[in-house]
Length: 337
Image (cartoon, rainbow, N blue to C red):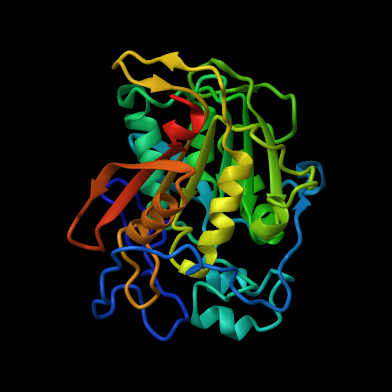
């Protein structure tokens, strides 16, 4: 998710602005040193959106009101819908108060900012395009990928470009999937049904299949919910999803639900022992005035002990808060290593 034009991106340039009584770049807040196990509970909401699958076959082509624009990330041109929270508020049926959405990029429990392209999504997309091969722990070829809080879906599309066999896009608002994610995938040359093959720009065939899931993470992660197969994903992606500690509990639960966990270990080229899937979480180190961020989410994961966490990239451009990309894997001690 982007707040300001990145060095290689053009398009939406609105600032990171939540309706929490202050922006993320307001005066500094105390730096958290640890997060107690009970510090993050589900945010109260009167009407959380239940899990649902959005069928691309039922999304019009073209989508009314979808206007294309191009962004350049990591040397790759992506086509996306030119949209913002204010414009989206006029077309979504998930909002009763369109004026509220126009004043903010997020309306808690109603609209989670999926219509904007935030800088964390651009960071994550660039990492997947430029650093996936060199990092040694990420395998995108034939991978099953889940993008949480996908919005425009650029990181997931980057994985499809790099050879992923399945990408599942999940966003809180099903309308975001219909209005933006599905048409964005189509505009970048991908067929949006399952078991499809698309000719990519370099002439190679992409075997990536796509699914689109809407709804609250608590619903998607709930045992017995067959929309999200347990332990099915080699790669789980999330950008700008840890801005508020009240969401941490659900975030951890959906990672536990989704990230593949293998008993069999493989020896990596760098000598480390690998096994199971990996999650990449891109976020600002601190969301001042809101309380969340990469640092506090990492503390939460480390406190619970199910996952091992490592910062694999730190970004600072002088125009925004310091940002990080976290690598999250199942803790070795829990895997018997």
